[in-house]
Length: 304
Image 1: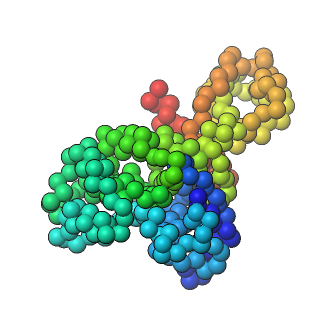
Image 2: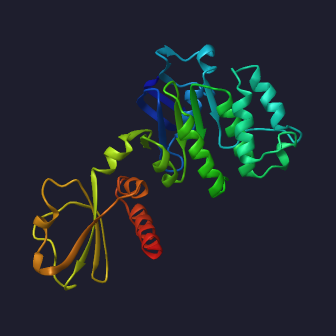
Image 3: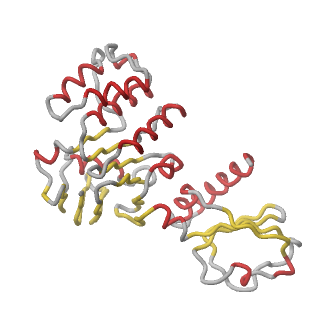
């Protein structure tokens, strides 16, 4: 179990983590999301012990984080350090002194990605370096795996292999925390998530449960000039292109048809809402995020 209580961290005058609280039980894959600068990487560094909090507490297995508990944690940063001559086999030998290293798991993942462990990492592409560190992470058999932008640089095939391996190999004694700019990737593998905004968790919970709180509808209107709504309906997002109106609302207490004038629409369809759409519409309402969602929905429509 990982638990943080009233966690705070500042860099100069910038208060990045503000009285943050979180509790994660074992056996979960947790997606950590937020815009750039929200504090995702800072939180992972605090959890791994790379940074110390200004105030607040971090518990690992119900004990304050210490040198012993750090041995249960593996942190993969967005840009792990290496020298021009460092090889994967060198890092493996180093980790063997700190962790209960499993060479079979390491070799299995190396074989999946077809990586040359005796060549300098400096000659690897960014994706190959990520693959190598993924192999090292799982081979440490750490109870808590912290991945910062782990999909960055991975090609589609490598991403699929990694996700399949992660899903198939997580056990009831582990917690995996992942940050990613690709919310589609997180939606595929994570069961829970936390959305950092303003230094604290604005939203937190199970992905499926939270997605069901929002409803997305596409309405084909009969006439452009007439208002289709006969009752007030709080729309988190509304966009009309021609006679096609797309809306996203919070979960309704009654049937959507009760809000609409049946004389001014031809058909209404309820569509599934993606994690990306959820993230965008639950941000603070401003023009920036509405524009982003407009672009996103347009891209989705062009692919259909």
